[in-house]
Length: 89
Image (cartoon, rainbow, N blue to C red):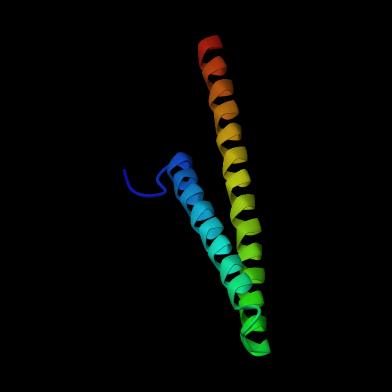
């Protein structure tokens, strides 16, 4: 099966992406804590900008995951209706 051939395969990819973003967020937060006492102001601003963008990415990826869940649910409902229609005919 090709990647993203089904909603479920896209969900698997998004789940991996959510984990990767989460891992990156944790690593960057640790970097900020470790470097805060000695880093230049510019470096701290850069690190904080990275943290901010990772937070935004996390929100978008989680929204995508919820949308895929909704699509899967709607597909199941649609298939259930079709099955009932075919049985009734």
